[in-house]
Image 1 (tube, one colour):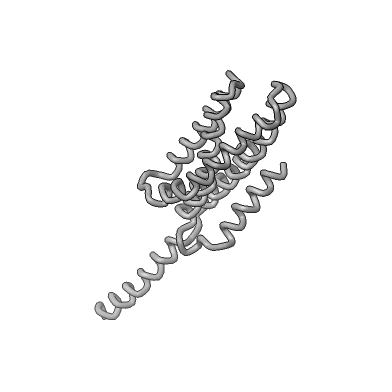
Image 2 (cartoon, rainbow, N blue to C red):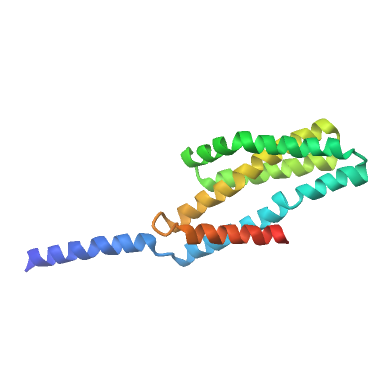
Length: 173
């Protein structure tokens, strides 16, 4: 009897432990919801306000549209150059992903402070470089954090689709 019970218990323990690893607890659901809120806010502030910065520089500060477009071009070149490198770094790094997300947020704050104190071309080039790095760093970090929260077995196109829907809603605001 003890041998059959041991086999029965062993068979029951393994599937339960596997099922327990994919069950979304209330804490994991809340974390996933908070990540979506961060993605929503990031889409509003990090992608949606770049156009307003150029309008501000041309209409209020008096820059020419060509000079303002250089800033946009610099940001896009940094995004192209750093995109794959940043994604690879985020995948390979062993530190917590929220540390990277906080670092990206601090870089964006530095970018905003640069614009508040000076609209000189050199400072705005520095801001554009930071914006390019932040832009390519944010969504891969949030996606990696989502993968860590929901696990590999639940991370599929539905989760990615919800993150993209939330980002597009943030952009539309």
